[in-house]
Image (tube, rainbow, N blue to C red; front, side, top):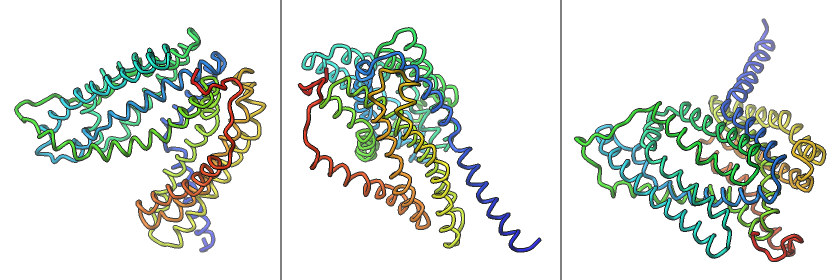
Amino acid sequence: MNIASLAQRFRHAQRSTLARGLAAFGSAEILTRVVRIAAIVVIARQVSPTVMGAAALALSLFELVRVLANAGIGQCIIAESDAGLAAACNTAHRLFWAWFGCVAIVQLLVAAVLYAVFDMTDIAAMLAVLSGVYLFMPAGLVQVFLLMREQRFGLLARIRATQAICDHVFTLLLVLAWPSAWAIVLPKLLTAPLWLVLVRRNRSWRAQPQAGRAPARAFLGFGLGVLVSDLATVARAQIDKLVVGALFGVEALGIYYFAFNAGLGITTSFVMALGNVLFPYICAVPVWAERQRRCRQGLAVAVVVFMPVLLAQVGLAHIYVPLIFGSQWVDAAPLVSVLGLGAIPMIFAALGALSLFAPFGLMAAASAYVAGLAVVMIPAALYYLIQSPVCEHPATSNGSYA
């Protein structure tokens, strides 16, 4: 066998490695997405944009309040030494209950403001009911962070995927029986006990009074950094929905929320999957020239695999949106196309930067990834904020939510 043939086989094996990694990565996530798409189809055919908007507003506010729960308590369990682990878990368990009780109160206060000031009775009631989630979480969080400390991420991913799939299935069934915003919101509460059972079944833990407790002040060091980081992440994902609701009303928010999930939301997951596979694939070889070749190969895969699907999703939205989701969503088709186009700069800017800087280490690659997104998105956002005229939505010219 000659050298050229060996080289060809080697390149084929490398392509197979990338393909297998891409196919194997996040199988639970793929299943979750399939169930989610099915749920979106059923929801869209059963409810109106106004109902969808009310649910979107309640869930966005819920996610913004829930970020307060990430106070860095669990990170102390992960960072603690073996000798002090039992005491740290004892203290963390008590702090979880106290802190989550405070977060529940904050959410109830937000619900009270929505009811008393903005007269949003249904949305306030949804937020009040969703505060029940905080009654389940503290009982399983020590176990979750112990699993993270033990690096059992596959198990955590399966638990998360199981909860997400059940969430979508419950939503689907409830929407069929009761087409309302409540049917979209309630599964967040209904799956909380399931999450707790799964966590406690897969990682046992009991308080050990004889081990004593760690000083509570030791848990404060992680809090601010974790909270700011998570708040920025959640704000990036939710603030746009609140802005759309505030400017254009609940019906417009429902159309936007649907278009986001049917457009950019789905394609983004595939782009992120490619990024997660591509980084270790590039870093697996020490030779600079080979890393460059793998960078080009990864981007070629992105173009060949994702671009045709993306272009079909964008170009055919006016056909499949009313056909699959129902005629009431025909106005959302242009939005699905526009938001779907958002995946194109993500592929070239984000993954291109990730590929180029991966050979210089994780921090360089992560910084380049963020910079790649910023270079595309920040100028576009500033342009539209500065140049676009302020206009009123014809259906909600008063600029209110309702």
